[in-house]
Image (tube, rainbow, N blue to C red):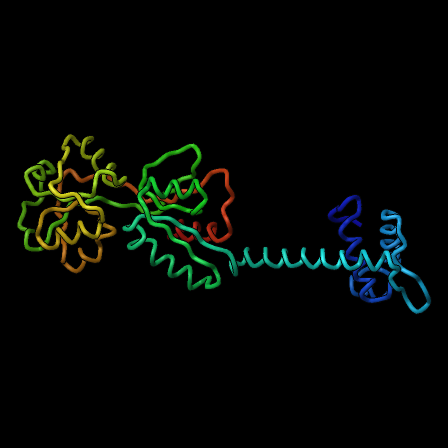
Length: 299
């Protein structure tokens, strides 16, 4: 009889012992365990030899525990119950009936990308607890390495030896204005933005850094007159006619569709980039994070 070994005794022997003690009969225990009666008898003899103790008193009416057997029974029964409880909890984790999904993302990605996916995931797995942390890319990566979150949505490209980073949403940086300021040439040379009131994210933002790098590569560095801390504020300022804002087309889609913002046909256009999901390379992801990562990939 194989199985897990505890101090030279297999766990299966303890299971047989507990069942015999509960049933008071080798034959009844054999039926419950789907074993032959000789196999059960042999298992108890093997356990008694290995423990150097007589565990049962045998009679024609069945078996009863000896004092040594009674002592072992209480501990073995409790240990098997604890193992079974652990197995059931593990099954619930795998079925996502318990556990937690812990995700980090910036304000813009949370509002325009993460939120609808979290809502759908939460409806699908209502027993999971949910933890969301907001922050800059640097803060999110700190949360990841500190174990506060399991997944972090960040602006790409980003590389680090200790992280796995996978793209999940292509995004395009564009320039927009309010409908009242839309009478501009089309196409509009990128260099003409140098003479306009330009509104961009603050310099410490990773998205701003990537845009600045793209502008330098295109040979048209831009110096915004207004710098703001959120993507939604960029759209608000442009919509009210305060200037031309650099925003993400995918996150401005609703306002563009409604005509509250107008995309300028700036040439050359900024290159596409991506929002990606990052997680620690050498730390196994919890079941909830693995499943949500699959949702992000499919999305």
